[in-house]
Amino acid sequence: MYTGTTIFSQLMHHLPWHRFHRIVKHYRGDYKVKSFRCTDHFRVMAFAQLTYRESLRDIEACLRALQSKLFHMGIHSTVSRNNLANANEKRDWRIYAEFAQVLIAEARRLYADQDLGVDLDATVYALDSTTIDLCLSLFPWARFRKAKGAIKLHTLLNLRGAIPEFILISDGKLHDVNVLDDLIPNPGAYYILDRGYLDFQRLYHLHTARAFFVTRAKSNFKFRRRYSHPVDRTRGLICDQTVLLTTFYPAKTYPEPLRRIKFYDVQTDLQLVFLTNDFTSPALTITQLFKLRWQIELFFKWIKQHLRIKAFYGNSANAVKTQIWIAIATYLLIAIVNKRLDIQLPLYTILQVLSVSLFEKIPISRAFQDSKYTSEETNIHKQLILFD
Image (tube, rainbow, N blue to C red; front, top):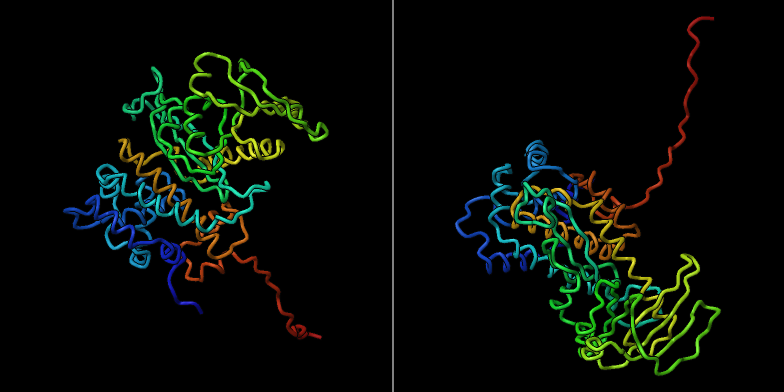
């Protein structure tokens, strides 16, 4: 019989706690804290994410019912709504944001060889944002419209493993294109952008940083064709052109040639026009790259459905950012464990299994095995006859 630690403890052992303690010390997260330190705070909030707890009262009730097991979870202090509320309100959210960056680096290393499905040996990113609606009366700092509150989650997703490498939490008013100013381009990487990020001055910054971009052209895009390349029309390609911008301000901010590819998508019955600064890859590869952008939509859908980032345990900006960053760290932890233990299951299934087995004392790898049980046949004697 296995008499080791619980699955939750085994899961927490995959975290680099020495790096976490260093970050906490840097931000003085445990300064004048006698109980419920940052490690306890993180573990409790991670438990809430893994089991999808709905409120502070819900978290408190569940963990107090398992009081005898808290020490084995690594939680060495009393869990109460007051402790949690104060920690979410006062602990610097940058502690958990920086710790998530440590996990991002580890996940990126583990998924570096992940197959993209496209014949391309480069890092590919998709950039997009999702809006999280908030009640304006409860979150007055998150004003979006006159009677509506919201925040935006701007995410740069590494498509090898669906790893969010850059996240910016802003108010709902910030336009998506402004996020390009905060990015540090990775030379040689590809950035897949929707039309909301079509700003030629910012795209030229990516170009001068020796990074590649793939985006869609708007319907009023003005250009002058310099050269047309041969294309295989049987693959859906209509044209592959080298073009120059003709509108005054775009031509001034982006003076270099662009590549314009027109493609007919049979599935949607649409003609799509792509713009890129990559003149070497096949035209069909460029269209396949843009199709991969859909992964970031799936990522947003996944975290909204399976993590606690639409309803919050506190109303302050610090509490909201703390909860989101711990949710991202939990997602990254699941991705890291999935790769380290070579679990051949989707992240959704892993999360569902963990949500009902965190307190089981079995090896964590055994919890995800598809065991087949067989019953042994035994010699069952017939019932004796009592009466003739």
